[in-house]
Image 1 (cartoon, rainbow, N blue to C red):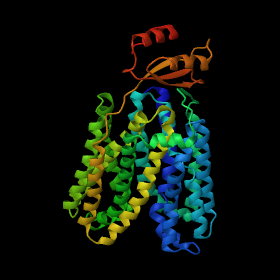
Image 2 (image 1 turned 60 degrees about the vertical axis):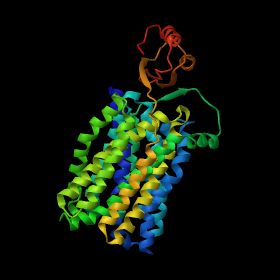
Image 3 (image 1 turned 90 degrees about the vertical axis):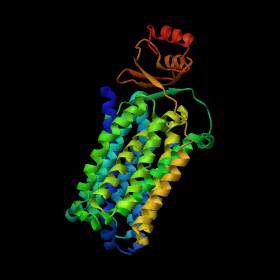
Image 4 (image 1 turned 180 degrees about the vertical axis):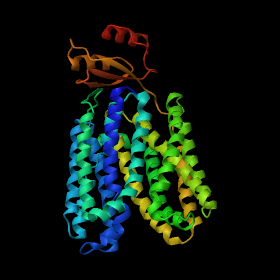
Length: 453
């Protein structure tokens, strides 16, 4: 990755991490701390926790439709402001209804897909999976840190103070956005209405399989984190306050294995094979848990295998999605995918609670394994994604940018041109399978030099 890509990946990963940190810190404490609010009931406490994900799922698609037509950075700022305002509303509330309203407002800042689309803009195709892996790592680390910090911070500042911390996280995330270069996107613009654009994305079979994949992945993850803490206490003898130091080593070990898999998938164009292998790894991890959950070390082995496969999937899914989505509807496809992610988390939490009521651990893990097997069968229909390449150019000073990019886009095989005017850098995204000799000659004439493609 070049310096620009590293800086942008750090900034956008930080936005994800800060939002998730503020979100996750509430989860381990609110079921108890939420009882202090007026009119609180178990059902309303659960709604206060879950309404964030519901509003996220509902508003990802509208935000992503706008992001394919307008500049992405202002939309991200709007989403982060809503997140911060929602935290402040919840912090100032004395009733559970005020907290629910605040959490719904915070969730309305549904810009996950827009952030991922911006990351796709500012990274070359060949570096996309690495960037997405770093973003996935930031989410995983924020999860572990949040579950460790949440109870401690609540003891210091109370539950309202914890909501103020989420507001601070949102405002800090806005500041990190200044590290991301300003971009203008140029592509073959197919004029269509919002509804037709959404229909185009929803009609694509492989995209739908990827949406099912992210739904299943986050359903399993959320259900597992509802289901497994009691087992770590009962069978591994690890108290709840120490669970963070269990998850962190497992996460780091999983990343040690995940990064080589991601490089293999991208460099050697083995994405489909690695993708299916990761789902199979999740299934094996769950099967280990079915038969060995009563043993501390087998339980941790099953969780470790799940984490390895999860981190591979977390990096591959956005990268594959950005390759398969139509250029002009990239954010829209990511918005549908993000909605699937949050719906998966919503249903996963519900399912995890139901599994706890079964009082039969083996059956609970079997249900999750069955879901993963169905997911694998659906995913066999995926075709290998199309691989684009990126050419990095210096922006000519003596030419009108719009005319120059229009001439580039007229060349067969050139899919998209992303201009970063402040850095005088241009990323030209090319389908090498479509480039012929005439296109190479045209490109050489336009650039004034020969470019190896």
